[in-house]
Amino acid sequence: MDKDRLRELDRKLIWHPYTQMKDFEKRQILFIDRGQGVYLYDLDENRYFDTISSWWCIVHGHNHPVIRKHIEAQLKRLDQVHFAGTTHSGPVLLAEKLSQLLPHGLEKFFYSDNGSTACEVAIKMSLQYWKHAGEEKREKFIALERGYHGDTIGTMSLGGVPAFEGPFQALTFDSLTVPPPYCYRCPCKLGAYTPGRAPNCNLECIGFLEKLLEKEGRDVAAIILEPMLMGAGGMISYPAGYLERVRELSMKYGVHLILDEVATGFGRTGRMFAMEHAGITPDFVCLSKGITGGTLPLAVTVTSQEIFNAFYADYTEGKTFFHGHTFTANPVCASAALGSLEVFEQERVMEHLPQKVERLQEGKMRFADIPMVGDIRGIGMVAAFELVEDPRTKRPFPAEKRVGWQVYLKGLGKGLILRPLSDVIYLFLPLAVTVDEIDRILELTFETISEVYGSVA
Ligand SMILES: Cc1ncc(COP(=O)(O)O)c(C=O)c1O
Image (tube, rainbow, N blue to C red; front, side, top):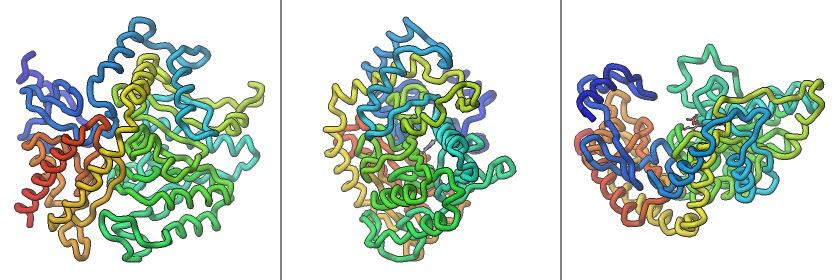
């Protein structure tokens, strides 16, 4: 393989996602050649910790032999078949296994192939459900500011990250939004929060949702949110009590609750699913990313028998759910998911997790020693550090300083792939990481942020 030719072809032909290509005018984009465990290796065999689990999906490390075995075996039998009017074993067995892991009441599985579509399916199903139920006016959706559910037009309409959705406003539909439980920048300005600790308040911020539902509740189809951790909006972890209250309110006003567990599912928050922290069952849950251990694209929207029943009718009644994608429930992807669940069982992944979670969550606290670390937050295998120019006033750095970008570049030199969300530096670790590796990753991240502090202070 001619490495220089590959790099040149990339520069000439490829337009990368979420990337300002001019940043690579004079700099070579990181060219990954292979992955093993929690490491990625570039073309020159330099090794990097995959501290963001390759966009929040890798669970058991790269190239896990059990998942590989499932994929290889499946490829010999059936590579692809459409899922409308035909079926095959992988998605059926996967649904059976997932139903044993999910809370009781989530029992109908609608497959698709990525996180955005899993959420699109949920909002379309909710809307159509209300038509069938005779509540035609329920057409509005409530989402959180700073929430993120994908990049399709529908999910962008429910997104709360202006940088992502801004240019496309002409295409999106209006949704209702409420301020999120972002404790560091408390929407109620209560000042009851110490970085890294649970807030000392009565979750007054739920009042925004309560007021909105009082006013608009009868016209609302569903509330959608990311349980326990808002990812793309800045890795904002929040108390389980907030989620409990959202569920109470959604039931009070007869509104569906859609939990987007695309990023939080499959152990990342320390529980198999983040909703378990609050002990709630939503009307829809959206799963993707970690479902295959992060190896292949697959998604599923899981809902209740009651919602399914509203669509179950003679064809001529026009109640069919017209939605589907070419690679819905692809057999190879489903086999990877079965492989991943086998690893969860064989390696007793969830039993080993608490020790790792504790190490990461305790280890993150020493970042308070770096003066520009304004907030420290996290849950499970996720830790995040919000960098600010003035910790006293919480004033962010001016965008031109590109502090997060500097951290990214400095991290690469230390063998870390960090991918800050603006100036929020985070670790989103594979569950397979060892305690020693967590220590090493924390140490290198600490050094990286400290050195960047030295140059921007
Ligand atoms: C919470 C959440 N929902 C949905 C998505 C969209 O998933 P995908 O990129 O697979 O479309 C993401 C992606 O990061 C996500 O974090």
